[in-house]
Image (cartoon, rainbow, N blue to C red; front, side):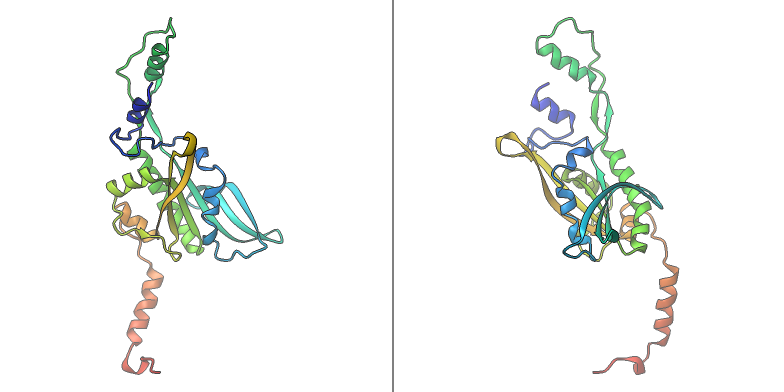
Length: 242
């Protein structure tokens, strides 16, 4: 199986200028040297020098399980935290025929016949839809607690989501947003060593996630009631004059 064939299987055009771009399947490849956690420290608004930082896996919350929590801890007490979800690409089909073809081309004999009509590829649609729906379920919990949830993923997956879902309202990252998208690229660097790099940051909130999925945002009745009462009392006499 040559390099070009691998790229085609992974869904990356061979005409791409960065043809060495890799599509990650195993989420552990994202953990690397801890970069994805370091890139979330700024979202710990109550973190102070001297606090310990802990990465805690698999915590259940209303809406599902979160892959990791980055927690700021002082005197063994959590003072702040950020939720971190890691999403790589899922696969569909089977890679076995390509494996057999590679071994045969390498000169290995006595291999069983293989059916090259069986295909293998990246399950872009299901991967993107599944993670966005999961985020939609979980973000309300984080938003109600005034905390942040971060999706760590590859830039190619973000590009796909931007094409297939309504993402035009999701702009550059803002600290006031509850949901953040940290997109990374994973490319060959010096001496052909793969290296993880932060590519871009975007953010939105629970309503923004509803819009991205084409859903109607839930009405915030309590907020609407307060706004209505305020608007009823606005007069020329309530205008603040300095």
